[in-house]
Image (cartoon, rainbow, N blue to C red; front, side, top):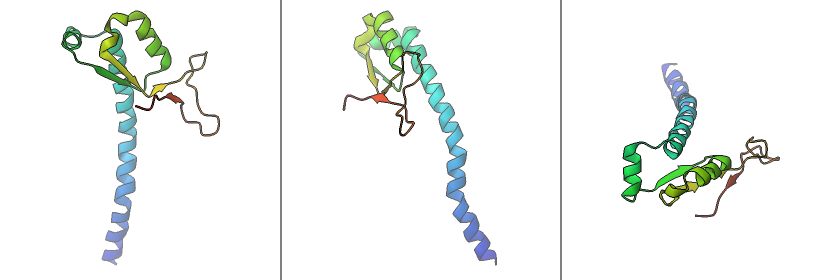
Length: 111
């Protein structure tokens, strides 16, 4: 009897860990986006100095309207920026999703 309870408990460990880790992971994604937007539009003096020294920041998963805004407002810093997996938006600003899968559409240049 004890052995079957241990086996049952072990069978639940991975699914439970996955569920526990899922929600914090989503929060981290949101936080990273906020950090990237802050760095993009309101960089610290240290970040500006790092860019001047050749550092390139990679911005992943930003909306295309944020990237366009950066091109308009921060053009003098564009050589220090790289954008990947940019999320496409509709004219309304809403994220564009694949009608069949519901997955957010991204621009991907294959790099």
